[in-house]
Length: 119
Picture 1 (cartoon, rainbow, N blue to C red):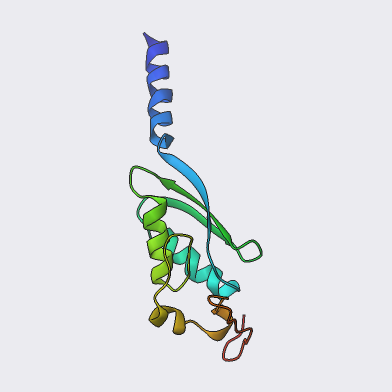
Picture 2 (cartoon, helix red, strand yellow):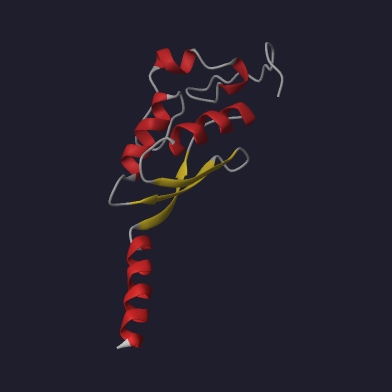
């Protein structure tokens, strides 16, 4: 009977991770401040265990429990802090409150100014 107890423990551990999913999501942004803002917002979503946004590729790799959240919910949170995703756009009001260096190309206008803060 002992081997069955061991097998039960292994299967129990596997089921804990069964809902984990990793996705890449395009997220508009420019700099390290954007990275901090985006990752902080996403890591605050219940079920998210990892969020890593790359300012060069403009892609975020996120690992989450798909029983607790979804890509759609994650994109909504990203948009609420000012960053556009493929399915959800930040409101103009939130976008306009971003520091100038964080204002990515939305409609052909981009600001590269880093005035007012340091990285």
